[in-house]
Length: 411
Image (cartoon, rainbow, N blue to C red):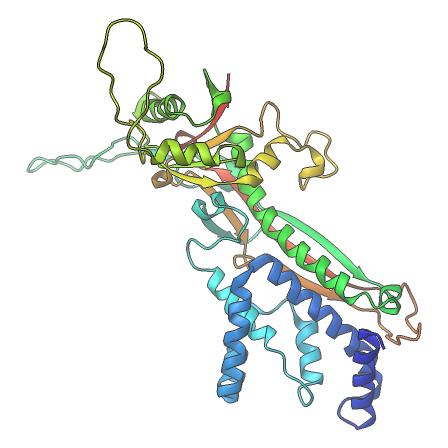
């Protein structure tokens, strides 16, 4: 007997015994399958964090059911998108209990904390976050220049000096990103629960990847590019020094600006090289077998100059066209003159990256379910017999301070 047949039989038996209304047996069968897919989606998005909170929810339910019920009721604001799943829970609460809803609430609450990001991107972790109420253009923070760098000395009996400011931030806005997966009557007949759940987990990974893309896309479009003389060699000592110098001495509207290199974000190609270059205290010199003996410095000038981070997704995005970009229908969706070997350097203290989320999406994407009006699994739906789960996320990113981020390239 197939998995779906066993599940349906269980609900039909419950209906015969009077535990649930008979007409809901088939709909609850499908909603249970959709819940499995929704849970897999969030597993794909949040990774181990959801698993940890499933354990927490289960332990709390077994040790203190009343406290578990109260905790679930208190988390309603974080669960507004899974009303279909929670409806199914209410219909079957005399038969079974799901730890998923409370675990998801705990997970979303944890995701609101500063510094959290899905597993896909280190760049996403350093981006300043904001929440917006609508899709109107917003001005990036962190790029306002006061006319005075310091508070002014005020001599006795003199008037206060008023300063002014120049806003350098550019406008950007959030955008809606969505995909849906259908669970058809034919999939039900073919007992394709496993394939559906696996696809939903991959969709969760895609949602995490899209948030990372949002930040990397902003860097690709907006960050200044530095053409290094030997850039094709990657993050070597001279190349890192060149980026340090470029960040350290800048002029913005006639004002000198100095930034400090703190972090490198690297494609997989350069991970090992950067680890050796930044982690070696001494340099080894080769050559010089002929000629006069001369002293050579052996101290590595870029030892621990920056923290290296692996960012393999960056190389994929830099080199992909529309097929590797949420703007699938835009033939110009790629990035000109970027390479899979380019790397990013920034001053994290200046907080040059910014990502905004529409109110309600700060803790992650949302899921929505669709079911036919009439659900009878013996081919009783009147239209296309399709159940579906849609996932949506709303965000946008920008480079708020271009003085503090660089893309390092070959010349």
